[in-house]
Every structure is written in structure tokens, then in C-alpha cells.
Image 1: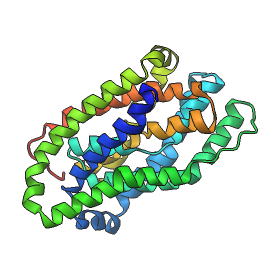
Image 2 (image 1 turned 90 degrees about the vertical axis):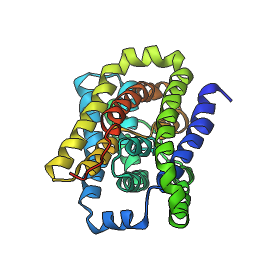
Image 3 (image 1 turned 120 degrees about the horizontal axis):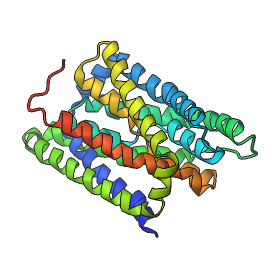
Length: 292
């Protein structure tokens, strides 16, 4: 097993699962029922992820006149939903964790349907047609969501329900641990992709930075335009701009059998952690969290 495989298949999922457990200890069932009672935030977040993100990615590929492989690679990334990393960043930013988790779960399931259509069109448009049949690892995708996100959060919520004092005491240590793990994962991602990082940044560095920053900016603007509170706006901002890089790599290397198509994801990973880190620094240092 290569270093990259160890990072993506063992270290990253395990780290994120631990963080999800900590998140669960800050949540109660009312946090989720409140979201579905007032679904505006979910609709805005899903619209950004499932509609605007692919459109922005497609537009950037055309504007920057990317070659077929890089263009399709960018579209793979743009078609993927937010991953567990977005939940981690949201927690440290003191955003609406329940909304973040809900958006990740729903978008991941819906994208099982949307990704094949988006990529089939991208392959036809940029690569001039292909006989490749796109079949997502549906069971593996669902299991990934369950094991890394849903189950640890559910366990954390159970702990919160029956050991409330312990859960309250763990809030600050877990937030600190989230930040430390975020930094370690960032270093690990760079180390694992060091050989291709130079080529990735040279070929699609600017494009992937724009994809990340534009989608994050759009997330924040749409949330505030529809008068969502700051905590929900933070969640939608992060969910709009932090994509499931692991799934993107699987699609590129395993399903489409093209390692080069994973290059945009490698470049995007760097920007994702940098912009995510900036958001964590800006919002995470708030001593008092308000809903305004």
C-alpha cells in the first residue's frame, strides 16, 4: 500500500470519524428536526452543490481552455458533493453542524444519480465522445458516509444524551483536536501527493483556486441573500466549497481508469485546506457565537 493510499484509506477516514464523534457530542435531535421544519437552508445548500458548482466548473474549463483530460478531471471534482472534511471545518468555524452534516448526507446520496449524468455530458463535450460507462460505487459511497459520518455522530449524540456533563467538558478539547487533525491531514495530503503537486498546480492551480473561492463566495452570498443566520451561512459556505476529494480520486483512477484526471483534485486539495484554514481562523476565534 502506497503512502497516498494509507493517507486516503486509513489515516483520513479514521481521523474524520473521531472528529465526527466529537461533533455528535455537541448535537441533540432537535438540531436536526429544526432544520427539516425550516428547510430553506437545505434547499439553498443543495442548489449550490448540485447545480451551481458543476455549472461554475464547466464554465471555468471553457474560459481557461483546458485540455480534455484536465477539463473532465475538473468536472469530476465539481460533480462531487461535500465530504466529511467540510463537517470538520464547520465545527471549528462554529457553524451549524447539524446543517452541515445533513447537507453532506443528502448531497452524497443525490449525487449518486447526478454524477453519471454530469460526467457523461463532460466526456461527450470535452473528450469528443466515449464508450466509457460510469457506474459509481453506490454501496461503498453509502458505507463511507455511514462509517465516517453518520455512525460516529449518532454515538456522540447518545453520549451527549446520557453523559451531558462529560460531553460539555469535551467541547473545547475536541475543537482543539479538530484543528490539530486538520493540520496533520493537510501535511499528509501534501506528502502523499508531493510528486504530482508541482504539475497539478502548474496545469490547473489557478482554475481550481477559482473554483474553490467562487463556490465558497457564492455559498455565503446566497445564504445571506436569503437572510440565513451566520451559523447557517458558514455551513453553506463550507459545504459549497469543500468537495469530497476521495470520491473524485476514486472516479478518476478506478472508474474512468485515468490517473491524470485526478490532477485537478490534487491541486484543489491544497486550496481547499488553505481556504478552509483561513475560515477556521476567522470564525473559530469567536468567543461568543451568535445566530445573527
